[in-house]
Image 1: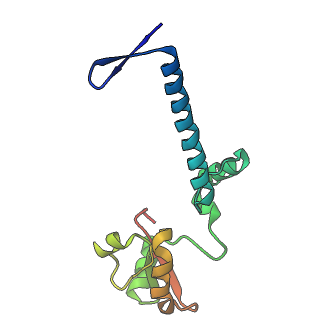
Image 2 (image 1 turned 60 degrees about the vertical axis):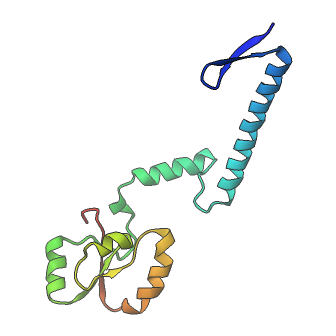
Image 3 (image 1 turned 120 degrees about the vertical axis):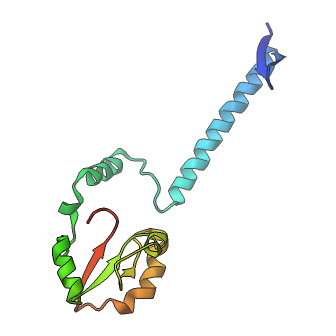
Length: 146
């Protein structure tokens, strides 16, 4: 029994059972190869998607936890009024954590740009590292309203 398959804008193509079987096998091979390539790329990518449920669940819990609760020791949230007073008194170094293009479009005068984007961070940190003394207050800001 022939099967009809519509291709290329309405042309009909008759396939017998053997041809249909070959088409289906080809489609399955393409899907399997796509999965294999996807898994291989994911394994070698540093920010790959976790495949085990426990890792994925941990990431989801971390994302759901308010970021304020996850601040490292010694890092504090500051009000804009206090930051302004420190800026006027020149008693702090301001670091803009936005991408370079956003920094270029406008930033706090004198602020250093240290983007919190993994592709840009390392290069930017090397550029500004000597301007970040450990004995001075450092205020980091971004576009997130903080």
